[in-house]
Length: 581
Image 1 (tube, rainbow, N blue to C red):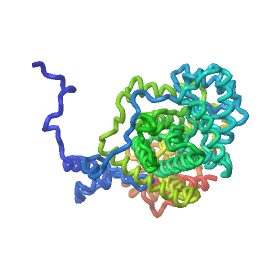
Image 2: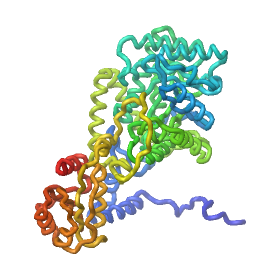
Image 3: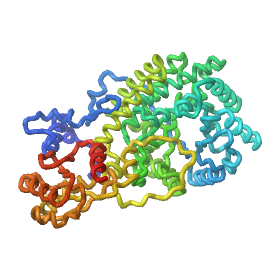
Image 4: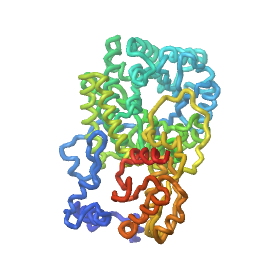
C-alpha cells in the first residue's frame, strides 16, 4: 500500500496534547517576555493571555470542551452558498451615482444599497439597472415614504416585477438616532412603507443596528439595540393589522462587521439566535417565515477606518468581510478603503467588491455553512454575546433609548481610553505612523454621515503637525539605543511630531555637538546608558538650550517627562506639543 504524503496523514494518538502541555509551552514564551516570573504557576497563562471585551466578556486564549459545558446552541447561520455582494451607492450627484452603480454591477456586485432623499432622481441613479435581477435596498432616512414611492413609480414605468430581495428600507428609529428625523410620527411612515412593500411583494423594513455602532456602541449594545428596534417595528405593524408572520417577513437586519474577527463572527451568530427567540416569544415558529427567519446584511465598520495610511483599511475590510461571511451574513458590503478620505474613486470601489470575490471564489469561504460552528471559543463567545445582548434588550425595553445612549457613552469613554494608551492600536495611525506619507486626493463627500472614527483623536493631531521637531538624543551606539529610539519616534509621529535623530554618540559632548537648539529633547538609550551618563546628557542639553527633557523609558529625576509602554499616548503628545509651541 502506498504511503500517503506527510501533509495528508491522519492525526495519530501521539499528536494529542493536554491542556497542561499547552500551559507549559505558553508559560515558557511569557517568561521570556517577562510577563511571567519563574515562580508563577504555568496555569497563570489563562489570566495573562485572556482579554476582556468592552462588554466585560472574557475571551479565553484557547477554546476547550469545558467552555461548552451546559450550553445548547441554537439559531445557527443558515445561508448556503455565496452571499449577496452589496455595493453602497451614496453619491448625491445622480449621474455619478449611476456611474458607480453600473460599474459595480459590471464588476460582479449582486445588489445595490442606494442612499436617497425626497429629491433624489432615482430614474437617473438606476438607469440601466435591471430591477428584476438586481435587488435595490433604499436608504432614505429623511424621506422614506417619498423614496419608496419613487422606486415604485420607476418599477411601474418599466413594467417589471422587482427582485423579491428589493427593500424599500424604512427605518424611522434609526433615522432618529442618526439625527436626521424627529421622534414624532415615525409609526406612520413605517406602516405606509410596509404596506407598499406588501403590495409589491418585496421587503420594506431595515433594522439598521449600525446606527448604534456608529454612535460607539459595543457588540452587545448593538445586538440589544437591533432586537429592541425589531421588536418595536413588529408591534407597530401588528397594531396596524398585519400578522406577526407578515411583519417579520418584511424585515431585514443590518449589523457592522469590524476587524475584530471572532467577536464579529460571534455577534452575527448571536443575532440569529436572539431574533429566533424573539419570534418564538411572539408566538410563531421560525419555519413559518421561510428558510431563514432572519435576513442579515453586514457592512464593514465606518468608525474603524482611518484617514491616515488608508491602504491599511483594505486589510481591515478584508478581515471584516471574512468574518461577516463566516458569521452567516446573507449580504455583505465592504466599504471602499478610501471612504474616510472623501468620495471613493473607482479603484476603491473595485477593491471593495473584489474582497468579496476573493473570499467567495478563490478562498471558498462560502462553500461551508457556519464554518465556525462547533469551535469551542466561537461557540462560547456566541453564547456570552447572546446573553449580554439579551440583557441589553431588557434594559432598553425597561428604560427606553435615553438610558441606552448613556450606556453607549460609557463604552465610548472606555474605548477612547484604550485607544489613547494604544491598548487598541490603530495601525498607520497610533502605531507605525508615516509622517512623510501622501494621502490620496479625494473630492469631499457632500453627503457623508458624520461618524467619529476610533482614531479621531490621533487624526486631529496629525491634521495639524507640530511646527517644531523634537531632538531625539540617542545615547551610545545604534545597537544599544535603537529599540527605545524607534519606540519614541513612532510615539511622537502618532501625534504629528517629527524627530531629528542624533545617531550614534559616545558621550554628552558628542551628543551636544549634534543638537540644533530644539526646545524639546527626548533621551533614548539602554538602561545601562541611562545609569552611566543619562543625567550628564540631560544637564548638557539643558545648558545648550533645551527647555524640556523627556526620557524614553521609566521616569528619571533628571527628566521632565517620560514615555514607556502603556503610557497615555494622547496625554503625553498633548503635553509635548504644548512645550513645542
